Every structure is written in structure tokens, then in C-alpha cells.
Image (cartoon, rainbow, N blue to C red; front, side, top):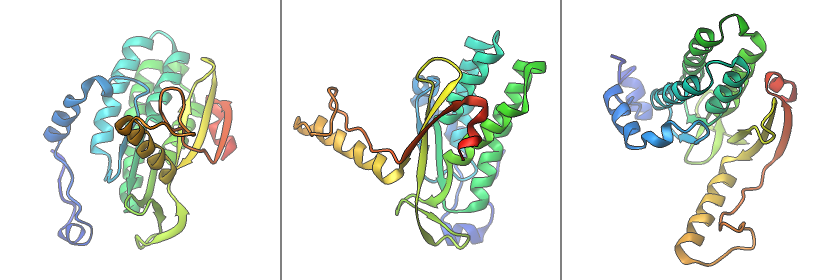
Length: 226
């Protein structure tokens, strides 16, 4: 069983206590249908080394394998989509690094098992690149990135959205600040509560967040856009 506390000092300094595996599984069971939807997005604002994200990734990859195990090309695309649907923030750099490593190892183990000789290093690098964008060292309260002393920097937390809009090898990446995503979500909730439409809402009453930049690239060459 994984330890729930790394050290008493970390608990005192950061309130760091990891959720036990049994509770993680039980909480994921409450939203089991979403955990098994390949493109459903999850954000863990105090992700630690990834207990929740690891469990959700395992469930998503199980679905990817059931549906696409006969095609390495489809498995690669949909597994990267599953990986790109998971987001985490933690104020401690070592937790972020451990979380990225843990999620990559889960993904890579399944990739190696399913695709065997068709595996390639470009796809592995794409998976690492996605995790580098989606697991961010920052302060989820101030929505800013932090330095090695856990102090806010001048840089906002930025997340990337990953989609395959053309149903081919081209992956579409859009970058948003976390603040913009939360603001759009709050406006959408207000519209649904009050019934008052916003000028910025679409026909479904959802406010579209403003993105910083976007890229389209082959899914194996994501890192070329930086």
C-alpha cells in the first residue's frame, strides 16, 4: 500500500496527505461512466504524485484497449487523447515530476503490451510532451506557476486542450490560462442558473474561453511546436 504521508515536515509545511487507494477507487466509482469516457476531462488541483489521475488513466486505457487493440494507429491516437484529458496542479515540483513519470509509466506499459513491435519513440515522446503541458507546478488558489520555493511567479498556469477534429493523424492543441477556463465555466453556470444569455455564449448557453494560441501537428510530432 502506498504511503499517505511522505514526511511530517511536508504535512506541517504544505498539509500534504495523500488519499488512500481504497478511497480513490471508491470516489472514481461514483463517476465511473465519465472515468471510462476517453475524452472526458479531469482536473486535480492538488494532484500530489497522481493517485486519482493514475486510477482514471488506468480506466480510460482499459477502454482504449478494448476498442482499438487491433490497430496500433488507432490505439496510439486514442490513448494520447485519454492522456491529454488529464490535468494536475501541485505546488511541489517533486510531486509534479513523480506524477508525470507515474502516468507515463502506466501509459507506456500498456502501449508496449498492445502495440509491441509497432511501438515507436516518437509516440513515447509525444506522450511525455502532453504530460509536460498538463501536469503543472503551480498554486491552484492564485492560478499562477510557482518557483522552487513555492512562491508565485509572474506566469499564469496554462493548460493545453488536445483534440483530433479531423479524425486523422492531426492533433489540435489550444492553450488556455487556468483563470480563463474557470471564468468561462463560472459564466456558463450563471447562465444555466439565471437563464440570462451572454453575448459570448454559444447556442447551447456555454461561454467559450479565449485561448492564447493554437497549433495543429501530426500527433507524433507535438514537441516541434514547443
